[in-house]
Image (cartoon, rainbow over the protein chains, first blue to last red):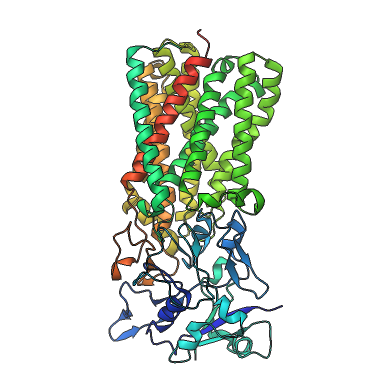
Length: 208
Length: 386
């Protein structure tokens, strides 16, 4: 089996939002939404800090679909539009989506975004990778782990564009991959987002 | 069917509201759900609130009607027809709200060829369809006076009526993502609130058909049903109390946050109205045998119960949408540039917010008008003069 995933080095993330923009450009993501966003954890302002001066900490958490092994969104989809593919990615069949938004309520990470209107784009034209299907109004979308790129053996755009190499892409089921080894060797320094929800995210975070 | 001048005006007004609502829905179809107040943060709104509410109104009616036959409560059989009529019309409204809420109704055929049976929404489609068929058969057989068939049907109808509202509860209660929803008592609460709001609707309908001179169920039965309503209110209050205690007691951070929003935050007015106006006051009103004999008091209490249950749907749905599990700026992207006036940085929100838009109000008003008109016309046509 293949289990594609991304590991994110939180100590390397500088909160530049390049991954968010790279994703938006690659995947033709319309105005008003992002598949990948960078959260300043626990803060009500971007680039804020947690704690009291002088003991302040700041953690950036790049947040997108966690490609869970036990995806809450998949079970609740009434038409099977959301599915787990043979590469271990959670994907959406846009032609099957009826826009009921069950999956949106089910996702603990708020990773999904919906086309509430006809997709609006600055410049009024489609951009990004031509292989990426264009979504219509009334359809759910989210991070595909750059399906079109990873199918062709390329890395996801957020991984390619990260200026600090904070992101590692690979196959968790291949013990020789850098990603699987990081996950195996980092031990306590591996963080799973909302682990208590039991959705078993494949995406993980780690410290240097 | 002859209608008085007054009734004609009433029908005219309701029909006008339905036409306006239909136009609003067509507008929504052409523009997308961006004409509603929903966004990526609060992704279900007034439509789903009304869906829950109407399933409850419907299930309550059928539970009373079928109990009469299952448990052999002779006196209740007299109100079977009005009960099944309210049940049928309300389930049509509930189903309508689900369809109205779909963003991609043009792809609805996927529900038939690719149905995924692990989805509570798939269960809902199956059980609501079954339920509707049972209701229609019930009306036909009650009309023919086929007591044997009605009785047999009632044995199926009672569990299905309970199931239809349980499945509605599971749409929410099985979501681990939402602290305020994920609870085993969600289905019992929904069934209890279906019993009280559904019976309350039936009381209002019975009072109305008596006033209109169509059917008089008799004041003794009316008072008895009012006593049953008081019991249902108490059961509902008990379940809600259990849920609140279980949520509050451990004092976890997530639960405290949810309770804070409910008791003193955005959904607080709805929460307190339900507790006081929807449970406490109507229960006190109906607790005395003397007061139960006064139609005005019973109708007022019933109206309060229905409003209270509606408020319950509101706080249940929206409280959990307000919070995010992974908190941090910039938060959630709205996903809708038109509806939320969200441009540039305004597209972000740290917490979900929602305000129903005119289109939603127009559509809801139309469905409610359909409900009133449907119940009134069917009652006039099918309920025998007594």
